[in-house]
Length: 627
Image (cartoon, rainbow, N blue to C red):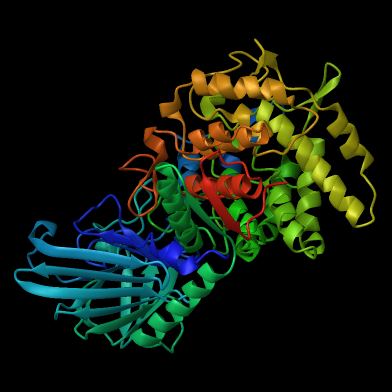
């Protein structure tokens, strides 16, 4: 008997009955998203209205370039100059992602405390956000919906309050999305239904139906009960009802296809199922765009809105496991566009192939940082992601072979021959970034070594499938890679002092879990390592993707109880809010989508491998395990 998917999704319809500023609700389509407060718009809190294309660059009168932020490490230049350095700071914060416009009700002098009868519902099956409330005795109903294929929001208001649209300047803060206090630094041109936004050398266009009344320099009011606002520079606008119907069709199709998992049994099964369903919705609207997402998606800025490529696997690998590889491919192709920049980095540093950046924006330029410039574990990601796609769509072998082979060429040229083995680093900052101050001497992190071997082996298999034969130099490096450091019967994080710092990401466990089995990792030593981490680690310092990583390690070792215990670990950064977001810190990271994506990857793998504990009833359709 198949899963009743509509009932599964309906069980987790989000209903909010009082203002909760830490758990706002969003509508979106992967390329564009709008996040609302309890009124269904941004009446009291200007959350994000963001799109994958929406970026801004501050003026650069000094003409700073990446060459101005390099430090020499044994003859190789790394862009590590940042704080207190003019060029490094400018390059680090630019470009930044834009807040495209605050769409709100005009509440008069009302505050959230003046609302009563609040009931806000996000219908996941249709994508419709309905917000009901009363202000000063007057009832309102606001319907908010996003077009599934356009950067367009449609709003219907019952109750008579006008809708307003306000525009900010960009913010160069790490975790701020807009500057509302600099009206003279940008311009809003208006001509009927068409608005043009000018911010320094950047501009974008907004079309509305109806035309708005200008109230101020960057403020417009719409008095009709229905308002449609598009940020895609297209003349024709659909009606509210047309957008609502298109959204309903899109989301019904989304939930009716792809994978589904239904969980029952112990009390925590319902909560894990809720997290799974909401994470599917959130990653579809925030992580399924044409570029890798930032860690907070399109909700608000984190690190200036830039995306961190070492997180791309966590954001997007799950799509291929849940029968939605097409959503992964939307951003996988982006790497091809930055091949010239990544190749230039490798050439400047004396390596073959391409070196992918860590923290970047659509142009692929690395952001100067004493951490990011030295991180390596994003390098095999395009190989892994392409392999996930190839398993479900064999034609991907031809579509992504250039990304796979260019990635592998760098991986084969980067290790140094030392003491009879090929070593990774220095300089290097591992996935567990606690060692960043020791970057000039960090060598052979356990996770990266295993990932390096598997990435090269996968690239070799692609060569064989294409009839090219194995590359001898790649094989020489792969076979000669240093073995991970073992101390007191467990894997160390790195092969240099201090070996293992027991905070932050326990990345050693990713060497058998995220990474499939390799000759470099002994399962019993990894079993001892996993339990050493669970028994004696500062787990409150871990992050949202660490719990899926631990769960995947346990699953590879055949420990289902340990896997589920890790997924549901009761620590602050494994909190999942009412809206489904994996909060890390309320102020800076109220959402952390690598956690949501990692959860989906782990649950798909556990379900496909039948690795849930006794007492759990698991029904799964259309999900597959990791390689």
